[in-house]
Image (cartoon, rainbow, N blue to C red):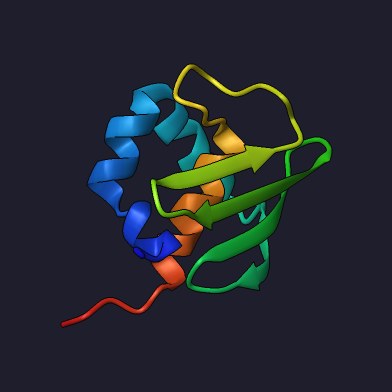
Length: 98
């Protein structure tokens, strides 16, 4: 099973999120609004401060990346800016082979 970090690699995330959500997530992450709570290979939990504290969960399942946020504003992709911000932070923190 792929890790969460593998499933949020930059090209795949940008393709799924689209330009608007990608940029909104980058802004939240770049301004330090993401706080990782649990960082595991198959599950990442975090909070994102965006006027309110949003709870985000990213999980690797047998089929794909499952993402949830308590903002209840997902786009057609199933993502929101908070999920994208946590995905970007996850990719940045994960070890990458080299």
